[in-house]
Length: 103
Image 1: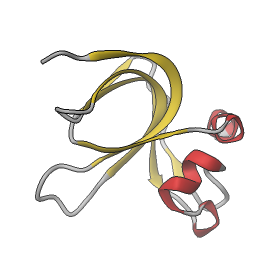
Image 2 (image 1 turned 45 degrees about the vertical axis):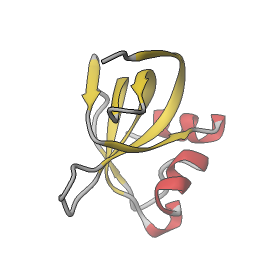
Image 3 (image 1 turned 180 degrees about the vertical axis):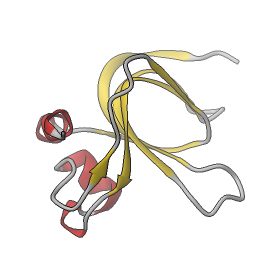
Image 4 (image 1 turned 45 degrees about the horizontal axis):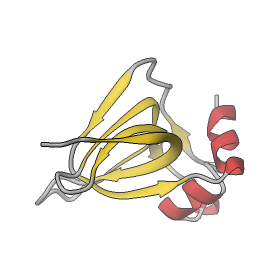
């Protein structure tokens, strides 16, 4: 498998295993991504455990960042290997800042 190195950018990644009824929503710095295999590597990843209605869904997480009522996990200090990626959304500068400010 040839993994593509990418220019580091802030993204929201949706990971959904085949046949699963749940999806994992992560935000972090994308450092590698292989579209064909659906494998991504993030650094500084955080998981959106729940995002409030104000957020506007997964796209809203990438455009605006998490809003009130959202629950965001802690920042992982290392690499996050993420399989089953079905969607990669580049964050706006405002969204990246909002993610950083979540306590």
